[in-house]
Image: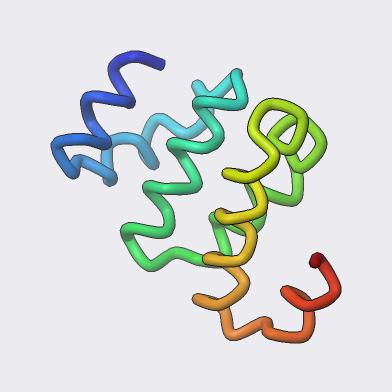
Length: 85
């Protein structure tokens, strides 16, 4: 969502999270994951990553991998991060 891009750039992560059900595209899900990470909500970010893993890796594999590792480290899931690699 173009609005989400603007919200993300202005740091309005709470609104992105409030509108999470509107996410439809890989770009939307990446912005949602970023918003969750910015708010320190790693568990929620991981839920998005896992439930849309195939779509995210297909759209932008390196960004999906980066988001996955950032989230795993935030959650202190080091063994899982190693397994994902």
